[in-house]
Amino acid sequence: MTSKLADNVVHFTRLLRGAGLRLGPASALDALAAASAVDVLHREEFYWALHSVLVRRPEDFDLFDQAFRLFWRDPFGIEAALAQMLPHVRMPAASMVSRRIAEAWHPPAPMGKAPPEKVEFDAALTFSADEVLRTRDFDQMSAEELERARRIVARMVVALRPVRTRRFAADPHGDRIDLARTVRESRKTFGDLAPLRFRSRVLLPPPVVVLCDISGSMGRYSEMLLHFVHALLSVRTRVHAFLFATRLTNVTRILRRRDVDEALARCGREVQDWAGGTRLRACLHDFNRVWSRRVLGQGAVVLLVTDGLDRDPEPGLAAEAGRLHRSCRRLIWLNPLLCWEGFQPRAQGVKALLPNVDEHRPVHNLESLEALGRALGAWGEGRPS
Image (tube, rainbow, N blue to C red):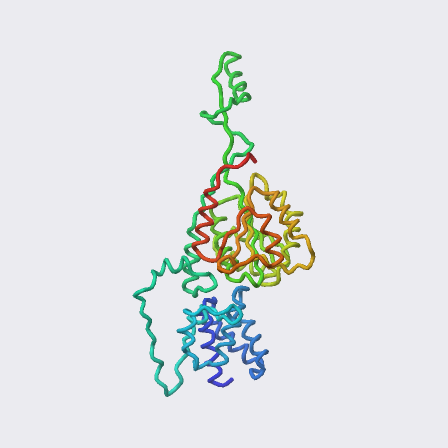
């Protein structure tokens, strides 16, 4: 391998690390070894050789692809102005380069040339960093902003208002006489008068069931929602999490791990259909048939996280959504597409879901997650479960 190619491979590894991929010094050595094992003149072989050693999580697939196409087209930064423009210009999704890649793009100056002049932007009329972060779309966040957003999500405390169950517990200030306890207490006095014992209904936060779409169209949104679910699982016991794209997977036990990075990495290894198509009807059918009676008791609240873009050719999505709606206390649809002003329910999947949900909410930034947390805590007591 020539020295120039080796330098470029090392710099490409640094670019990926700057974009948020978990790579260390050993990763650059692995990349050099992989590049040495293939014919670098064949672009596809070179691409998959680097991919095999530098990509370790499903959410890094798109970042690697964008970085490879950008870097190996122009490794010495002829288009260095792209790094200044991309964070501020919102382009169509089909041609968008990740903000994380754009901000990590610091190409080295070629030998014999002066470093490019640093462009400074006047921030006098901009918002504070925290306010901008709260309203910025997850898909437009840089690597640093994503890390800050994850820390904020981890600190979110969702105070679910308790609901009345059918169970009773001893309560000296209860509104009902506990006849059984009163009779047992009277046996201690050999039938003489004994003080009355009282009881009241047990109040418990309702179970929360999260059905999260991890298909390719959801991308960064599903990753951030998993951080939200992990934070919810860390403070609540009756929370269940399921991931789906072409199949349904229960990841509740995986997400109960204390370390969020370890939990998400384990999800990436266990879930086989990450970033695939969406078979929404089939996955809801599997949930209704296998899991509904197990997890939807006691007034459960269901959070359905999906964009509604169903790829299942078979009809019946409306019937499965209706069955799910009747099985739970509330069915909340969290849709990242609601962030667009011109959103219209034109897709067949969207039309099938809308009549069968209690609420249709956006879930594309920290502000929408905070609003969801407030809504979960604001719902009043429901029917005894």
